[in-house]
Structures are given as structure tokens and as C-alpha cells.
Image 1 (cartoon, rainbow, N blue to C red):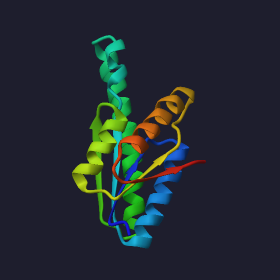
Image 2 (cartoon, rainbow, N blue to C red; image 1 turned 135 degrees about the vertical axis):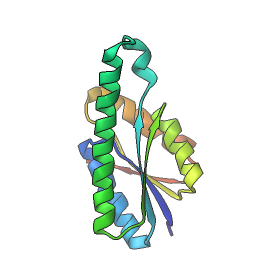
Image 3 (cartoon, one colour; image 1 turned 180 degrees about the vertical axis):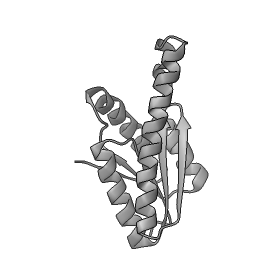
Image 4 (cartoon, rainbow, N blue to C red; image 1 turned 30 degrees about the vertical axis):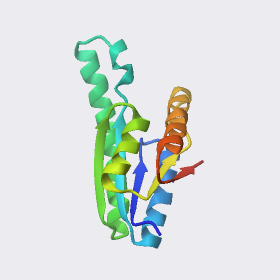
Length: 142
């Protein structure tokens, strides 16, 4: 039923649960698994354009690489075809765009992020994706 699955990861506990669900779906359907981490650049205009912005960006990139590495390990353990992506911009927009680019027929994502602010942001990201995506979206809760 699903040949190409896209999972959005951010390193949060609910994101890890979403990855588990995506791995299970990919294993059952023998699907290709694609993982994406989006660096939300929307708040960068409020950060001074000095080394502070670089430190913040590098930290976000590190978090993304760790989350994508976990997805890759899961894909390898399950002998799945796997691709990973780091995108920059509005997370919801980037997830929807990437799903169209790769021909995903299922998007899997968590219901919220790491903290209260992340919950607010990711909650709205989840809402955005479910409203704007042309494919099925699985929202995973803790």
C-alpha cells in the first residue's frame, strides 16, 4: 500500500516514536524510508548576525544529524532502502515539498516536539502538513 514513506525527525521522544512507526510501516510494506530534519530558520532574524547565529545553526544541524543517524541505523537493521534530507525553512512547507519531490505516499510525524515552545511550533507544523499534504499523514503520539 505504501511504497515511499517520509518520516519527519527532530530528536524528541515523540519523534523517536514516529520513527519506530515509520520503520514498522516500511518493513510491513517493503517501502523505501526517507527521513527529513528541517532547520527552522524563521526565528533566525531575531538572533544577532555574529557567531551566536553560527553556534545556534551548528547545534541544530548536530541535532538533525543525530536524528537522521538513528533513522539510518533503524533502516539498516530492517534492510530497508533509505534516504535522508536536511532542509532549511518553514518545517511544514519543507516536509510537504519534499514529500512531493520524492513521491511519498505516507508522511509520518510526531504530534509535538521537545519542549513547550517546540510543542507549539511542531503542533502547528503537524497541522500544516495534515492540511496541505496530498498524501496520507500518520500523526504519532507518545
